[in-house]
Length: 372
Ligand code: ADP
Image 1 (cartoon, rainbow, N blue to C red):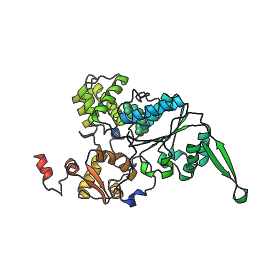
Image 2 (cartoon, rainbow, N blue to C red):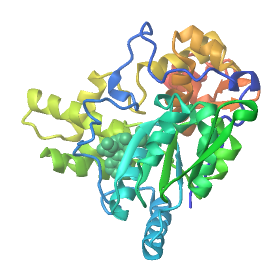
Image 3 (spheres, rainbow, N blue to C red):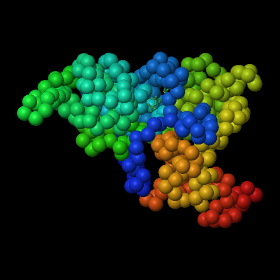
């Protein structure tokens, strides 16, 4: 079973205490190709998104996570109890929300969806919890952004299915206890490291979702092409998969772009050549990096001599929100080995130097040599 990994390990501690910023690209940042943004697009990720798998069988990849969840759901059903609370951790677009919906569907219960930043007051949380029927799922996206005052009410709600509310002050204070039905809390986060220990400990099941392999993404692309009634050959779906940054949401988005390109410039059939042409024209390179990824890489390689450099310094130089860089840009660059995180800051690897096109200081001439 994939287990939770603490995001933020090996980061300069001064950088870990950042304000909980927004997760959108800065408005005045250089225009990045939105096609590779793993954050949700409301037009594509509406609740009725027809590409979203609705059962364990339709869900591609993450085999170990699925196997464990299937057992948990089946066991809860046979005991006539709610499924244990579940925490999903991993970069955006990897299928956390999808899994929450699948769990509630497979369990045969209703799902109520909310997100951390919208739960501003304890009463918001108590209102939601007291409306849940037995076995229902409360899905909280960006659970690391719940205010601490609200979070404290969740401890007894999750553990004992009750909420204690204190009214009045001093000698006049009284504690009111609300009994709750047995429910399942499913939390999703891109930052497990920002969850408090007491909250994290109350999840019985914790999973880290990792990036998908190109083969898995190729299956996602073919499945989506079938639903969208688009003709695509194996090389075409492999090409889209290879450039999708290990992320199903991006694979689906690229498929839509390539479908448009194939319709306008060819006979509508997606081949490897059409996919490569379309994606290159969208600014997506062979590794699946977009303009912001490349800007990050060349800034670190060129202006910081390959690093080490602090995240905030890089963010200021590229004029981008540091949280976006940490949540969206860096995980994939780390995954494919173009950068590393050290206690002193971010550094490019030799492959990162080569891919940035900036001559390496570590091994002068290596870039030129690779061009010859
Ligand atoms: P997250 O909550 O992690 O940001 P989502 O669950 O919203 O990601 O997934 C984004 C989109 O990617 C979904 O709407 C779905 O179409 C697609 N998707 C995600 N995971 C899978 C998967 N395992 N198989 C097929 N499609 C997937």
